[in-house]
Image (cartoon, rainbow, N blue to C red; front, side):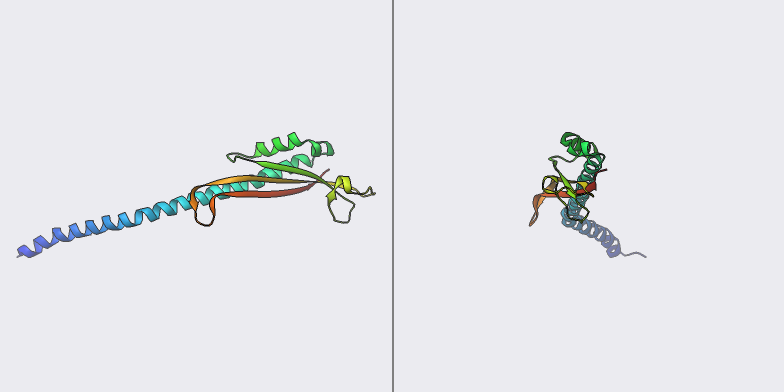
Length: 153
């Protein structure tokens, strides 16, 4: 025989369990949302860093095709922009360097003429990454930079 005390205890236990679950969800929901935002920002940051690196590599590859393309700053910039997507504020700086085979790279205007003169192009790409939220100690934006160096053929 089931007593009346046992039948009344079961609904109360279910009510307490539901209330406890609701309280735990209310306490953990903001933490879970914060973790989700941080994960999303991390993925966006890595994507932007890879995109800036790829833009610098593409610009250097274009410039390394010939001495004429190494001097074509508009073509270098367009090659970087063609490879770059979803990243704004791209700063691009291309520098022509020369070496006489000693391994020291200097601007071509200051390199003395020699028998084994080799031309290089150095492309620096930079872009600003804007985070979804402001992180203490990091701020709301980061500057991403990449440098690519190629020998001009």
